[in-house]
Length: 196
Image 1 (tube, rainbow, N blue to C red):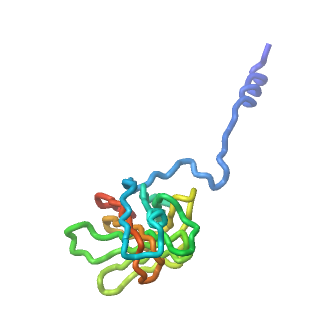
Image 2: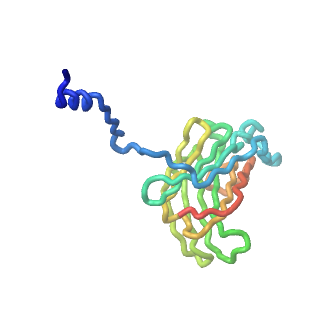
């Protein structure tokens, strides 16, 4: 016959406690912005020679997301493209603008730019108004994942506290120069978003 102490010891031995590793997240964070984009809609600038059409179409975007990262209010801006190229002849560039909603008279704006070919040249700048006052988040470093996803983590100080519309544009060209681009793709992001 099994006594109460033996029964309790048997029950305790059969309990398995799963403890997540230190630093592991118990829950997955969902994007606060998700915008799919139709593929095959890259605009080719035929007057600019030097790249094949295949190279120009590598920026064909299929999705854009904004996801919270960390505990400070930082955000990860990510775009999925057709292919990240290893070519040194051109840069694949992502530009994101956070602007006041249509019809607003506000003059603030945040400008974000990054390229997988020059990951440590990424930037984010929040212009507080049209008087030249701004908050600069630089240097930043962009990331590439799976050969198709480009992302940049932007500190909260460069995220506007106001509700914002989002404009997303991708180009092939030369990052952080005035050189003319070879192609362009735009991701429509309908609506406005409170990103703080």
